[in-house]
Image 1 (cartoon, one colour):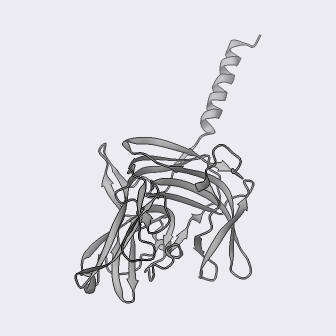
Image 2 (spheres, one colour; image 1 turned 90 degrees about the horizontal axis):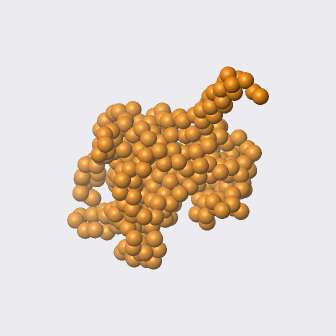
Image 3 (cartoon, rainbow, N blue to C red; image 1 turned 60 degrees about the vertical axis):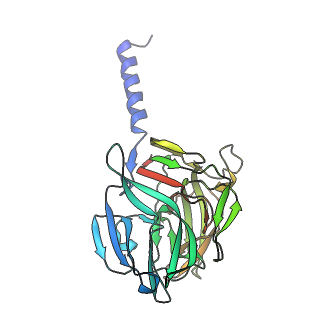
Amino acid sequence: MMNRKVYILLALVACVSMASAQTIEPVPYGDMEQWVVRIIKESGIIGGNTRELYCLGKTDTIRRNAAYDYAKSGCPWSSSNAYAKVVGVEKGACTMRPEKREDGGTCCRLDVELQSVKALGIVNVSVIAGGSLFTGRTLEPIKSTDNPNSNIECGVPFTRRPKALIFDYKCKVSPEQTMTSTVGGGKPKTIQGHDCPKAFILLQYRWEDADGNVHALRVGTAMELFETTVSSWQNGHRMEVHYGDITKDPYYKPYMALKTTEHMVNSKGKVVNFIEEGWDGTKTPTHMFINFSAGSQEAFIGREGNTLWVDNVKLEY
């Protein structure tokens, strides 16, 4: 029979091994406690309003109409907030902002909003905009709304294999099965469908060919839709990362499919579209794309009033 002291020692070793097997690491600035405030003065022709745009990053206030250099900020996060300069007209958009938590500290609030632009006092453009927070950068100034995905560099360099994405959240979600569409401009239309907040982390293996084209494989996936209102904070919510081809797994949902509309800046400094060409869980990732959004639909479609609050973003290893 095993000596009792030896048994206790082995049990303690096993517990220590299990504890050491799990490591939780905060994503930089994921505690939502530091913010940059950008003061943007809009063009007089659309009212000359002053807008406050918010970025996660080392606390600062910037008072000028200028592109924000996410690449030099030292922060992996960007958002739907953006400074636009279209044919000389300057405007700021803000659907992501800090908000105080009821139990202390600061969180990130993301909203789906119908934003209208007035020229000479007349509303001539209305756009449904969904607030999002993501790892990557917004390529400012925005010069056109023709292809909104081309204004976003999705993901940041990353070579590790986390077990899970962990974060705090709550959300407000309309139960209505209708949405607002402003695709193509003109008067907003009511269409059928349900919009709700989402969160995901994608691990990708990307490479560039001799012509500057970027290719990608999906290495790891964790994705969730929040389809009903959750009024109280869900602290430490855990989304497990699934590696490799998950299309035959019970976990898989159609919204987890390979992506085809993402962009990045290649080695030649050109913004290029890249497509996830397959699944390969054996690869070491080159990029990590985390995204929290108040809506789950394509650009310019959503349910006004939906809101997602996020805080304390971490990775489990």
